[in-house]
Image 1 (cartoon, helix red, strand yellow):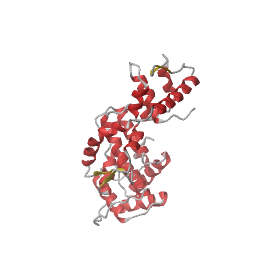
Image 2 (cartoon, rainbow, N blue to C red):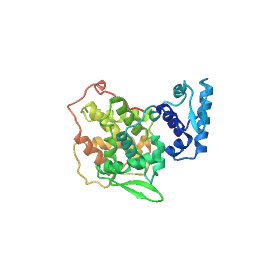
Image 3 (tube, rainbow, N blue to C red):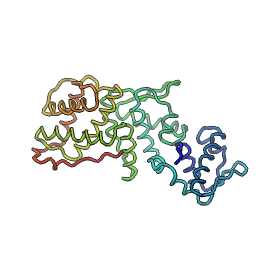
Image 4 (tube, rainbow, N blue to C red):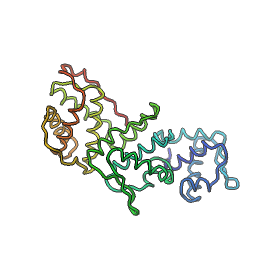
Length: 299
């Protein structure tokens, strides 16, 4: 199977979704590339069509004529989230916000567009809403004419913001897609999520307490975000030392996390995690390990 660029897949969707014949110039303008680049994309699409015996795209007077069976070519492209679903503006804003926050240095609008499988002009049109959305988390988007965009604010606010991107206001299937894309940005393997769950479970068990399923899932997500951020060199800001009933549990969790993922074990991280734990729903002593429901994290 050939490697298919995101833009090429977007062109396939564009051709399928338009009843009227499109032109080379229209596609070139939409994707902000040259007509020659579009021709190369069409050549790749024709190679896919040939492999599947679906005919070929023809150019007549600059207009693109697709074979009647053209839609079946989607079977030949990766079943990635953004290939299969066309994101709404709200979903684009959430995912673009997570890209920005997860990037330590500046990121260009072209890079964001590539990750969303949209044109740069679409990102430009969304930018004011992206900034407003990020602003709700006490964060600010900075623009640099030669470097792009980056998010400024406290590390704790960035992590809490990432935890709260849940695909709000969309159907469950699309909601799962938004969450999945945000999780993929953390670059953690499936076995890493399982290890995080095991560490958290053991620490809760040793504390002789029980975390409700939704709270357990929330802390698993936070720990994944924390690992990713620490590996990027982003640590929690200085916290006021206020030992609490979950401080020792937080300390035990982070000692194990630090050994497993080769990250620094800092007291500020312990303090912040303990305060998160305090806010979650605990109840009583858990005597059997199978009372804790394992959490499935989409990869």
